[in-house]
Length: 132
Image 1: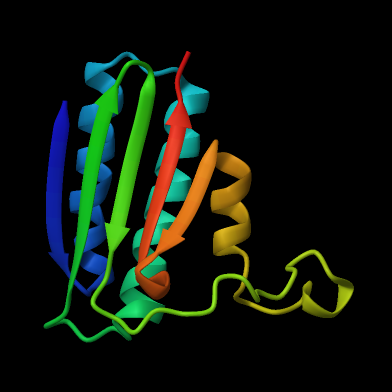
Image 2 (image 1 turned 60 degrees about the vertical axis):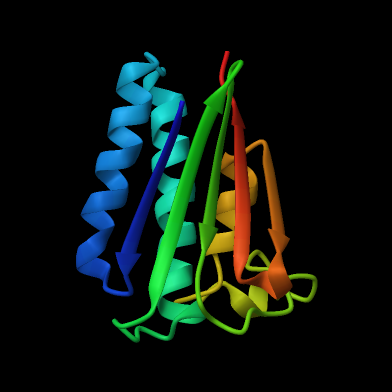
């Protein structure tokens, strides 16, 4: 099973991504826990692509690709931005960062998914969930 959605860089477009996640999770009878992890991690990746990658420029697009095969669900989220240094991120659990309003998205993604990999200079993220 493979699905693809392309959206403009507007948070109002997140509903299309949520519909994609709903469709994939419902058609494959995912547990509520698996669904919740997928929903949070993938929407966080899309929000990051919109806000940090495409800088909220609505003419720029975010492409979300989803493949489900043999109990592995993979999402890729690609923006049109310049990328970022994903190897040098501040630790959101560090006491000096606890009060900051941002900086937890990638931490959440890494803790909810089984695998998170960045490529294309950080403008693409692949998120993998093993579903039992």
